[in-house]
Length: 164
Image 1 (cartoon, one colour):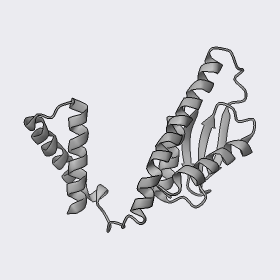
Image 2 (tube, one colour):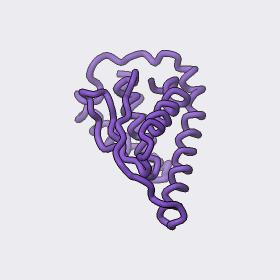
Image 3 (cartoon, one colour):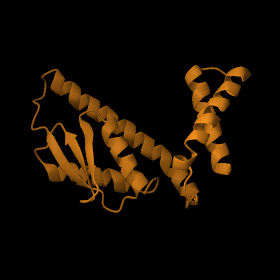
Image 4 (spheres, helix red, strand yellow):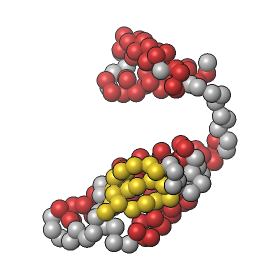
């Protein structure tokens, strides 16, 4: 029940942020819409027993560093794409690189793929669950080992503590 209440509060807060409103009627409508959505999707969202959030304090301490690293990655990716688009830097060899998932959990693999897709110049093409890898299209795939090393470094340094 507490997962439902937490999800209801979070969904209602997102609704109010999207409206940029704190009107009580908006909050009531948002809570009703969120409750209906959560009830309709409860089999998908709330199956199984919740797992305890181990090392919650350590995870919360790692969050600012992770956010900063993601924003830095987005900034660097935007700069690189802008230089290519403006013909300041040549395109290089775009292509798909196989990035092993390693010891990432299912949630960790999802977060890694979302982070990869947020940065301009990189896009998740597919998960290859049989090989335990994600296929990522990058603007410069001339050195696949360097791309894999960059993804592994980001995971080990910034994400592993927060979302393993």
